[in-house]
Length: 283
Image (cartoon, rainbow, N blue to C red; front, side):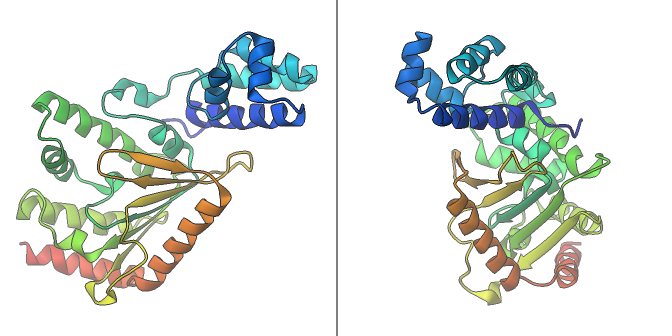
């Protein structure tokens, strides 16, 4: 997998720049749609990154905005690159939305989970048990497709030459819930110990003794990017879907929540000891 900007991140960057240029030209979405003889909803979907945009559409929009030839050529090329397919397109049935494309280009990933091991840290057997439990409606072939997709995602942490900084704060209940049986869970916990030894991976556990804590509402992931043109984004996960939060005040709120969680959690070294002891109890 490449660590260059993913097509998803390029599309997000292009969308933000197109919105900025329209606003600089003092044009509304309706006015642009009228000038280009297309619906205002199409312009809106392009500016939010919900749909791809062709190089021709970009060229037409930039002409309306009065953009210089140099920037026009740059943005048209960005549109071409944004239409390329990432490795995850081979798993379209398993991955939905922009999540994996954003994850692939992040410079840091900060996550909190209160119910299960985060996907990037799961063993194959744990993943299979989780998918079977949460998706009893799908067949074995679909289960295996999702398992392979998740294992491919994990290469981001284990096989990249420049992996993202990964920091996970887990509730103690994640360690105590025996998923897939004692042997599967023991293997999973031992893998957490191994991954925690990587220089770019940090694990912390919020113990039961901490009581109520800031992360009890829903699991979330904060994704940070190396380029200033790509602002941080928060992905909040719900039972059947997730939402992306990009407004600075939302990102700041979840950053504060994560800081509170880190403060309430055991130190990384103590966390590894707790994980190891929990694994040994399953022997």
